[in-house]
Length: 237
Image (tube, rainbow, N blue to C red):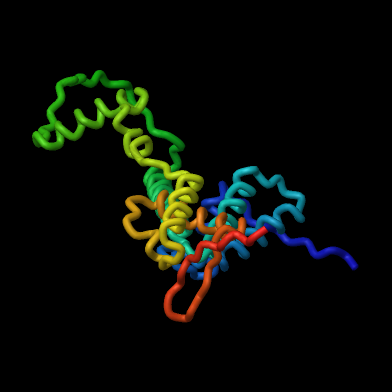
């Protein structure tokens, strides 16, 4: 069977093709249905390749861009997809306006391909005439000074939050718990966490209890009312 031959339209670039697809399929340029547009665009690029047309790299790049926007739109958090769609919409609107203006200028040219006139000497005024509020000047100065300070090493005060925190070791809590049980063989589980001043102390206390239980030096019992920690008496030899 003889292969059907058909002629594809030639577009100046991917933006020109996107505007054609949006107009042909009556899509809303202000709220582009990205899934539908991706399928139409990739199908047309595929037809161009099958027709042995020289597909420029910018068409392939736009296809990859549209597929990426489609992929991001499938994620639960799609703020990036919304931003990318807005950027694409802005570019399409700008390209459409430029294309319309080019058509109007072509109609006014009356067959002339270009306009020409002799260069003119324009006076150059280097004086700065804008008026700024005092707060705006202060913010600009702080931002300019901040750029230089970013290259400096951080001050010592920035490490005080980390260095000033006391790290409680598990071994110290093991000794403290066991000494307490030597004086009083039975105590409530929660009593060992009372008076803790930091998260490090809470974690160290909990790990210390696990180590004592694992070593069979203490045992943990549950009477359905309170949880107590008992010192295991040494067995007689």
